[in-house]
Image (tube, rainbow, N blue to C red; front, side, top):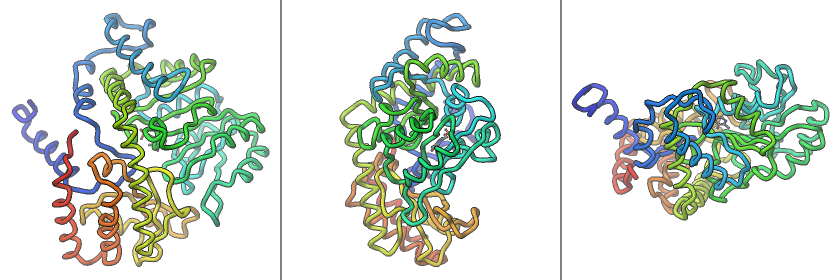
Length: 409
Ligand SMILES: *Cc1c(COP(=O)(O)O)cnc(C)c1O
C-alpha cells in the first residue's frame, strides 16, 4: 500500500483525486477511466517485455501476453470496422509519427490543419518533428464561416500535391466530410490519414462520422473520449498493415506497455456496450446544450456551434482574454484551457478564447438540463473575473453540486 510505504506520495495522489472530484473538468481531451481500466493499468503486466508482435516476439514468456494483445486488436477492429489494428503506440503523438513513417520520406510534401484552425502539433507545426521532417502546408478554415472550405482545400492540394493529407483536430467543433476528403486525396494522388484523437469514443459509438471506410490510415489517442488508458492506436487497410507495424516497432518504439494494452482491451469492451453508446450521444447533447446556453448569455461559439464534444468560445464580447479567463475559472472550480480562435488578433499567450468540452461532465452523470447552470457559473466568472468573493462562492457551489455525482465508476 502506498499509504503505508510512502505517505507523502499517497497524500499527493489523494489530493489530486479530491481536486478532480470537486471541480467541473472541462478540458475536452480529458476523461475519467473506470476502476476496471485502472486495475489493468496497475497490474503485473507492467513487469513484462514484449518487443515484437503476437507470435513474433523477441523475448520468451509471451503465451499470455500474445492473447492479451490479440484481444485488444480484435476488439479494436470490430469496434471501428477496421481491417488492421496496431495497439502498441505509447500515445497519440508517436502513433502519428508511425503513420508518417509508414508512408512518407523526409522532405515529402504534406498538408494538415493549421494550429489556429484546430490542427495538432503533429500535423505539420514547425516546432514539431512533422514540420521539421516534412514539407508541411497548413490548411486554414474560411475566415468568414470558420468552417473548412473543401473547394479551397482541393485547390491547395492540387497545387501542393501532398504525399499525405493529415486530417484531424483538437478544437474544430464541426463534423468532417470524410467522403469529400477522400475525393480530394484521390484527385491529388495523396494518402488520407485521419487523426481522431479527440473524437474516437464518439466515432466508436456512431455519434460522429467514422473515417475508417474512407481513410488509408486512422490514428487516435485512447484516453480522450474513448475513455481508456493513456495511449495511441492505429487502424489501417490490410495492405498497409506491415508498414504500420514496422513503423511502430522497430521504427519508433521498443517494447509495448502491456499493462496499457490490457487496459485498452478493457476500455474497448466498455466502448462496445449499449451504455457507452448512450454516453457518447449524451456527450454531444451536453455540448450542444452548453453551446446554446453560452450563446443565450451573449457569447459567441467559433463556427456557430458544435457537432462533437467540444467548442471554442470567443470571449471578445467580455472584457477578458482567454488566459485571464482560464485562471479565474479554475479558481471558481471550472477547469478549462485558453485557446486561440481562428485568425486570432491577440497573441498566443493571451488568445481570445477558451476551449470547453463535456466528456468528463458526462462521465460524472451530468445531463443537458444541467448545462444552463454550468453556463451561469462560467458567464458569472467571465463578467467579473476580479470579484474574488463571487469566485469563491462559485467554487463552493460547484463542489456542493458535484457531490451527488460519483467520481469513481
Ligand atoms: C491529443 C492529440 C494528439 C496527441 O496525443 P498525445 O497522447 O498527447 O501524444 C494527437 N492528435 C490530436 C488531434 C490530438 O488531439
